[in-house]
Image (cartoon, helix red, strand yellow):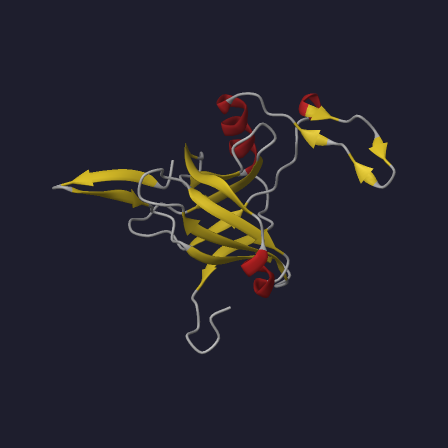
Length: 170
């Protein structure tokens, strides 16, 4: 899981292979569909704070949730499988990702589809226009299995770090 703690020669804190900053989900058609701000929580408790918005300028006031980037292993094609766990309470959101293996900071992922197996779909009907349908994955093995299955399908887009322009920081 990233971020992770470090303690080295009297220094301590948190570090992450996944870069902190503003990230955009760019669909296959080139449209931006979501923005995420990934920040380090602090030096003592290692997790990321992730805020989500439909436009970059909305990230400033977005609710931020404790989150983790989790390496799930490799797919059959050798690509790394990752997931972002947004939130820490039951009902967290999971975003499936993949990338070619490489060293150094991570600044881009491909976003995988998330087709819930029918046995894992929960649906209590609707509350007016509010849907209650969700996908319940109860174990780590279920999540890894779904990620491996989704790695065989076309990706939905990319999740990429967008550098902050000093003339236009957000």
